[in-house]
Image 1 (tube, rainbow, N blue to C red):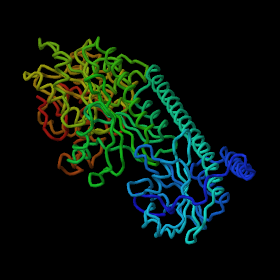
Image 2: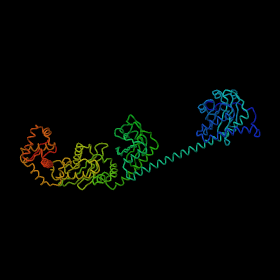
Image 3: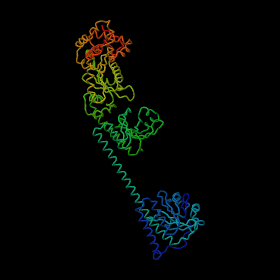
Length: 638
């Protein structure tokens, strides 16, 4: 049996035993009965056997039993080449692997061609002397005599069965040929039926799979569309995508800023996609991989361990027409990426694009989405989901720390406040990934929401320096003044912050001299802004004179005023005041005692006296008499 392009183990002369038995011969009836009984076993097995090879094995075994031979190999026609390819074998041990390597019916295989041409059994009594079979095949399978039986269905030879007794010669009779032929033709019907059943089962499986995929796709569409219609924010959409796929999801805007992440349920500490982080996407290989993605089509990137990308990642552009808003990422972690993951990523990106387009159209009536968001925050919109969606449009997180700055002009300057767009441009981000401040026109001037680099006093000082630089860029003459709020950590803080900024601006307008600082924060004024923002200059001057008058009238007492100023600015600590001023602690104690004697106020122990002195000193700082950085300059009390 094994060879290159020819039949396995069978070939030699035509049967010398004459024609097949007559249908009226009693022996024929017996043969038919045996063949039909054997076919009955095959028919019963059809409903139980789901693999074609199992059926072919049963047919091979039954025909061996009917003819009384030890070995059989079964071949089926290849429709593309019209050759017959080995399928299964039956013998004392498993010969399937060898049979499957064989092909019969080639140019040198006269034995098989005769079977096909006559559509009748052909016998080779001696393979060593008969020229029809392929010698090499006969030798390799040790075949001495062989019976080749066609499997005929509707006039076509759909398969061939080769029977032999291995290394033994055998005389095949007309009865052998007849019963083998009858059973082979019946078996052809069974094989055809099994193939049709298998094809139908495959089609049903395909349809079921397609229906299941369509149902899953419908679930995805329904859920994601519902999120958009319900006004869900990006974080909620990312979480829904993560739950649908069981994989971590991240959404980035057009500047690659990550604005939302989602994790599957129970995966609170798992990996997140970092493909679009500044460090990773700057790698040349990652840049090439991203550039290789087709426009507006999702694709898979990675892994690229040398670039820090250890997992594959689906990258789906979030685009509406030619307007690409950002990207959606799905990370392969915990399970492999599937076609369903690709479907969810594509649909998710599309739904996000729809939502973004709708939100942008809604905000088109206003000159800027950022201005709209800033206005909503300042006015106190309580719809947190709406605020979050608007914030996502401009790439900021409103629960990150920010400060509200109010920019206006000094009352008597005659200068016009720049428009909100110009102010926003003056606060352009300094580095990649830094969110842009939001600016909007308000009654007093322009309100600017500025992100804090850190949620502490240093962060506010950095914002103060940024506001000072922006004011200088907007008006070189120094006519602009600005008040900065305390830290805003949630949407509800911005209404309070707006009031604080107004109070600071009022204090600057009332007390600050034109040649002194025009940018102050609410923390610079402390609780004093509540009193000073509703006071006039004359009342404030009288209060200062009544509180600190004797320290102001005599220049020789300037050191007492300075010491008192530093003492109050540093928590009334003698040691810290001594360190700032560079004098002995006893000197500080003496000066404080002298100041208390002249003002008749117990600054060290009396809380009322402390508040009065601190408020008076604050007014002097606003007027430029005392420095804001205590201990840096000496005051001029003249």
